[in-house]
Length: 415
Image (cartoon, rainbow, N blue to C red; front, top):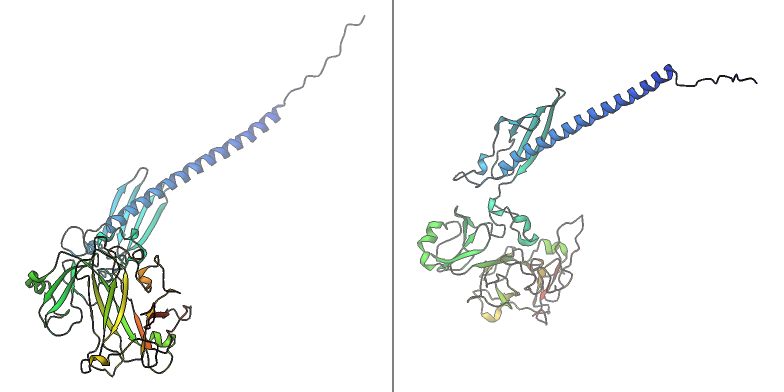
């Protein structure tokens, strides 16, 4: 019996195969290590850039947080100027901060620039730059973004509320004075709050007083005549007169060619709670016939109720010239010898209770009234009674909207 068995061949991994496998794995590990290094470098750079942006933003906000517009107390607008470079120690880098102000024309917006530079781990110099503009607006209006869009408080003219008459004289103490157009005799002067735009004082001044000569001292001299117990909201605009012969079109509505007539403004309030008198209106309508075209400017002070909202309808009241009998006053109607009053408005109808009063509806509504806000540019166009109120559609070619609607024609509801 044969007990010898064949020897089986032993199989295994050769040395060369093992070396190749190790080499492949080594290359993979090197790639992973390189990837980790790159990720770490990018994360480090991102962190440095974020910190540099934060430092630049802090410098800009430090400039923006001025206290006054004038150099009288605290940090003022004039302090926004070029400053020397500073060094700031960050979490993983040291930063050089450069600050410059290319424009210095106060109170116009100032352009400010902040550059932050540092050296990264590779020895390369990195830089970020932030540029912005800082407007010369009083800090008390910092919350203007939460105001209604038609309040106007965010759009300041001459560093005061835009609804204050442009000709009003700034007293330099946060108030402005204005003498509305009046006849002979003792005059009424209004003192506006530059921030709110409200009339906070109604005073009697000398007969020869005017807006140009009015001052805080002259108002103080008549302080006993000032009513400070109530505020008032301003309602203002123009009354234009179209040419008498031809049917007026949108061109005539934009640039009326008619001669001005004598008139008064009458306000019929439907809101309640107003002190007496509830309002006072003034205008510069001619007392005698004129031979030059031009609008009549009017100003009405509506004395505020507790809610500082109001509603009602404003009308044009025809008057005769001073050298004529009262019966000679021009009249409102639809006949060729009469006149019709149109109102400038963007509305396609007479307006609803929810229409904004600034859009000039037929009747100002309580819902459309912004509390404590005044109204300007509430303009009218007087045309021939037999003519229609000119309409105008806003186009890109002609961006001026001179659309009008009937406001008074002697017939209901336009009485």
